[in-house]
Image 1 (tube, rainbow, N blue to C red):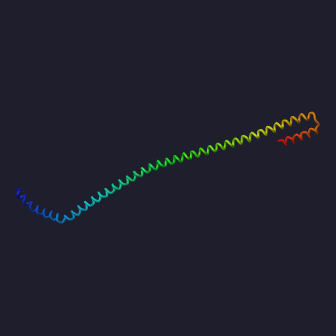
Image 2: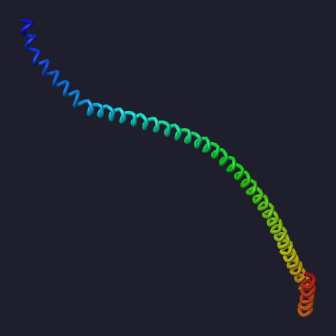
Length: 162
C-alpha cells in the first residue's frame, strides 16, 4: 500500500518539480530585482538616517556654542548695564548736589532779602512812631502854623536820609 501511494505521488511530484523549476527559472530575475531594490531602499534609509543623525549632532553642537555665546553675551550685557547704571547714578548724584547747592544759595539770597525788607519795615514803623510822638509833643506846646512847617522840614530831612 505504501508502494501504491508512492507511485500515485510521482506524477504530482513531477508536476510540482516542473512548476517549481519554471517558477524559479522565470521568477529568479524579478525576485532578484525585488530583493535588490528592497536592499537598496533599506541602505538608502540607513544612509539618510546616518546623515540626519550627523546633521542633528552638528546642529546640537552649534546650538551649544550659541548658548555659550548667549551666556557670555548676557554676562557682558549685564556688566555693561551695571557700569552704565553706576555712571548714571553718579551723574544723578552730581546733579542733585549742584541742585542742593543752588537751592541753598537761593534760600540764602531770599533770607537776606527778607531780612532787609523786615529791617526797612521796622525802620519805617519806628520812624512813623517817632514822628507821631514828636507831632503829639509839638501840638501841645506849639502854634498850628509852626507845627506844620516843622513837620514838613522833618519829613524832608528823613526822606533825604532814607
